[in-house]
Length: 372
Image (cartoon, rainbow, N blue to C red; front, side, top):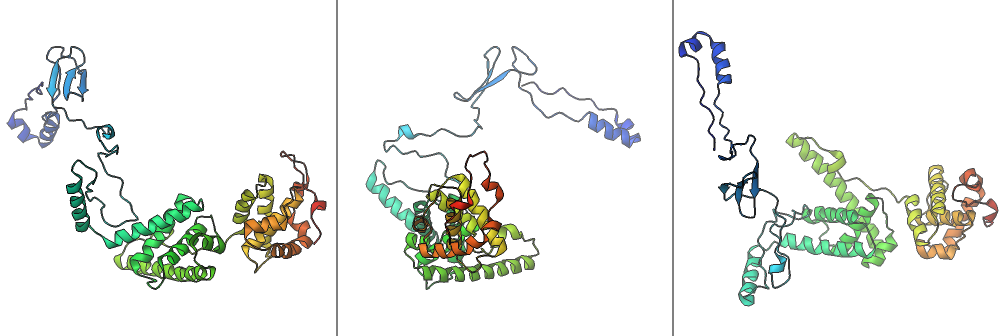
């Protein structure tokens, strides 16, 4: 180590006479506390130092002289020791990230039961589980597993599953709906989460998923809407009392609207293996009908099915009402009745560009539409 050169201050009498000169002198002659490590043999400035973390040494990169030992490795720890374990597991050096959907710091120590002394390890694991047992966390974990299983069986995105878990946590922590079964509440939060994130599912699909009746899903949906609305009022009241700012876009529950037939058209067309052009045409027809209120009061399912029926015939890839009903979950008679309302207004709903040859090479023809 090369110590900093000693600094010499001006005489005290000069500093006492001129306070500004005193301050400048203190700034100029302030002691340099930085210690620089240089090789005593090479004396290079800046020094060529190499940290060898495998041995813990600080070495001169020019001549190889060891200048320090027991150097602490401050880099990230990426190494695991899975090959050294007989069980073949991978005990990471750090735990997983905290889960915001669970309570507590989640920093408990876990004791494995598959060690060298199995009996004693199992006893320690049992005692540790009793000491750190949390009924609330255990109930939430069980519910989250059910939500994950239901969402995966329907190929619902992970973001919908996480939103459903967040909604379920609010309900469970508030102690609401104690008379309702857990499966009923799970069905309701999944239904709401799907609508909120733009991947709506029908009552029939949720019923087939959870075996909760459609009437019960409808009731729990309305009850959950009222519950979350009351939670919004309580959150805003608490924020005003504490004098804090409230982010309405993040902290408030947004009430879900009815399902948009346009969103259903895309999913139903994919299940029917229809082309992208037919999907786009059916979505535009549904959008025009929604703006014009042509099928007001009808189910979004029947509207989407009728739009697909119209678009498929128009573009020459006709699908029967029976084929569409198997995907949409409505009867073929309902689809035909909705189509009867579309047919007289076909001139307004059908864009003239669809009847002209475009890049896709598919041309629509009004003559392909079946008479209502």
